[in-house]
Length: 272
Figure 1 (cartoon, one colour):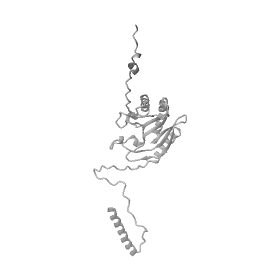
Figure 2 (cartoon, rainbow, N blue to C red):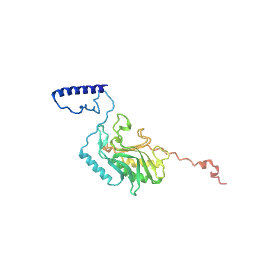
Figure 3 (cartoon, rainbow, N blue to C red):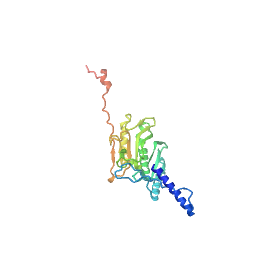
Figure 4 (tube, rainbow, N blue to C red):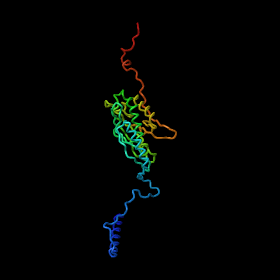
């Protein structure tokens, strides 16, 4: 109703001014001037807790060029199938300058390990993931027919930690993290932190090698939010502090040989 009334007021004012202008012999524009669009964010009242849409920040040209140079140098190493993504920073802390969309990791033998879906992460983080896969994950999975694919649970996502409103910005919001849902072998087997068929020895290797290469590793038992995937990031902390929280399943106790217990004929007979 307010918009309609305002529009009628503008029209009336225009035609009134037109009549005066005609009497004065003035030239008139061919179209009625329209009011300015409403700002994307109106001023807030005190105590208004509604979410505010972030504002895109202007990135200095020299910063964009420097980041693009780093990304190109990483792509030139031919470790990944990837494309450089546009830089974007928002006033709520989200975004990154220097990021890429990676769809596969190239191995020295020419094979490619697909990421499904593709991951949008910072170029330096992408290279760290590629090195971990090539140098640690592939050898660790050779005994299980070899690695074919990585199922990605999350990469860039502008959100607070664990999607909790009011929490600190997640490294996902800075395009600095990757969540792995599962890894798929060449024979079709699918291993993950919540899949019972996953060998404990393999989970141990995943935890050990990832904690050596990344500054944050979170898995089951860390905070209740990583029970079905594990999280990797390169967060920079004061003093170089690193965080590795991932509880492995407790291996079952070795069972006694059921056949020897159940079959009396297998028991050693006393000598006469």
